[in-house]
Length: 76
Length: 202
Image (cartoon, rainbow over all chains, first blue to last red):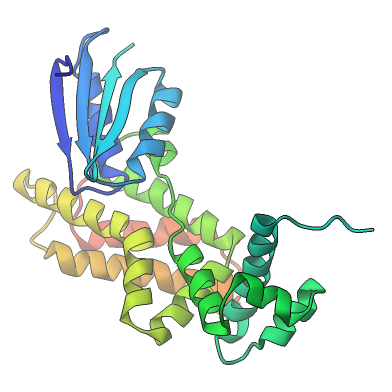
């Protein structure tokens, strides 16, 4: 089981809503804390890579199983 | 002597030429011979990659319908209130269409071809907007930040307005709108939309 501090359910949402919600969720975390995001939009893989690259947060994990995507992002 | 293209490169070059021609004249207005002629190859080369003209058309339509914008930059590059994000998203989309107007032509062709193609275009291009508008309006309504407006109708209105602006500026080059830059037109239209739904900026 992945370790995380807060969870965001973005299943059923298309870009930009998962990114917008992740931005707000990350902002509420202290540095070093981890946000887990679940999504169903296939485009979210590239979107969260770009999100982390641009925000400086760390993408700890990104994987897919059964059409669901999971991302673990650590706030910098 | 020209380098012989690898299979993937050849397929991509066929699709690129087919996309432009089909976008301009539709399925019935273009022949396989013409596509082959543009590429400088024989029709037999096309048939090695696509079983039929119909298969080539469907591949071109599918490729262009599946193009999807990323709005990561639009979200991160400024304030994250609904109106600001919607404006930046719409600008990203309009810029993309202005760079490749064949997309809009193929969307129009797709509409004529049938529901499946139209749905594919909607899912990859418009659903991000409609979901964003409808879900955000639901949240804004609960905060009293917009008027009493049906969100689904509002998102349909937005889609219609933006699509029409793109037709006027990118396809028809309409003289009525020639004096206004696409970016400024988009800003005005998004502003009108926000007024129409009674949006109050935070």
